[in-house]
Image (cartoon, rainbow over all chains, first blue to last red; front, top):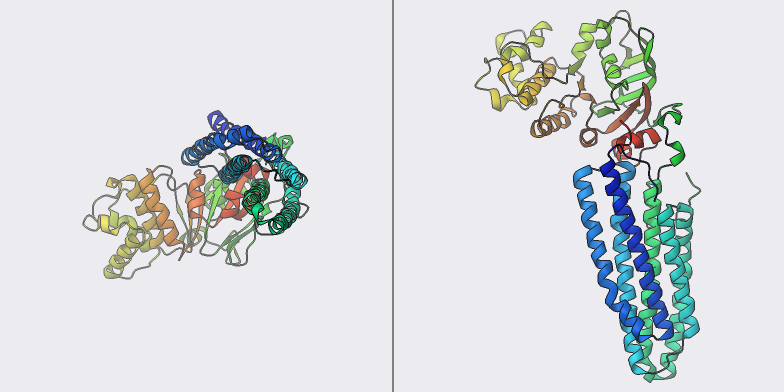
Length: 230
Length: 275
């Protein structure tokens, strides 16, 4: 997130500080999601517990960044690119916080799954979905850090594949439930986890839409965006 | 967001004004306007329309030519020795620099309010009545009384001064004096009001009162304002023009200028990246 220097050095510092906090928060969220996916695939109780109990750190940094942004608006009355930066940050951190919540949910469901001591199978399907989601989140945060609208536009496209992947996983889950009703309880936990992963994809897409807004000043939510236009 | 390679402000070329300098319902239109003070060129090829019953704000760093440009619009620069203007400036499609155009009559149509309130050393009443008498806008005392009252009401000052109309105008507060100057300007029923930093000598409350007044006046008059306060430009104007070193860099809807300006120089100025 490179920007040109301000006349006011203090203003510069304040903006830089908020930006680095956002990137830091992105890193924390990414680590949480990676751990949650690992815990899910490997049915790791310890790791799941750690994920579920670490979400408060992300919530705390969200509140802190919100407060910083409110102060920047009050004290500096940012305009043009600075204004879009602040607005984008406020929106991005909301999505990051929600991603953190989804990771926490996965952690809690995994803890319940592990406690039943049944093998849930589904290894390949969940690995594939999990990897895709980790990749899309990584790309979204990368697009944010580099303010790269082409990558952002690509992420927006990739999210559709995650939705398809989620539908595939859902069909498999339904099959398992129909095969043996005793599976239903566990399969519901797995469904919630898959659903949480799919939501992380959606939030990553939102982040990329804010990157496009930040760079081009164009609101592409609920529209088809082509970075080559204009 | 900002291209680092464009860091040096002088590297950025200003070929022509970006944004939307021209509009359909223009009150003023200027084409190819150059202004010189002796050999020194102060304005380079300014092309812009000023919309009827709109407020246009002109912003830019000190010495960028925004005040010079504003003063061209009612020929205030005529009085400055060595000042030379070329190009077309039309008010309602009439050339205001035509040899038959009387500058005094032009200034009755295009009034001006200055940075420092400058009431005449006369009573409040006489301050407002002066121009109207000069231009013969009232045929008797009753008409003149009505005109003074109407102008003071429009300028939002009447309630405060109605019991002291014959006290000196210079005894009012800064904000009241500025509204008195506005009342004096609108007493001669102009079509356009030019304002050169009208609130920079006023406190925030008096500023807010004048800004409200501007928005109200724009229903009847066309207003062009030069301001150093970007927030003021953002608050009151519909369109904003950005000047840089004598060049008219960008003219756009105020909303666009303050959220997503087209030109890098505009962005730099709006966000405080050079002065």
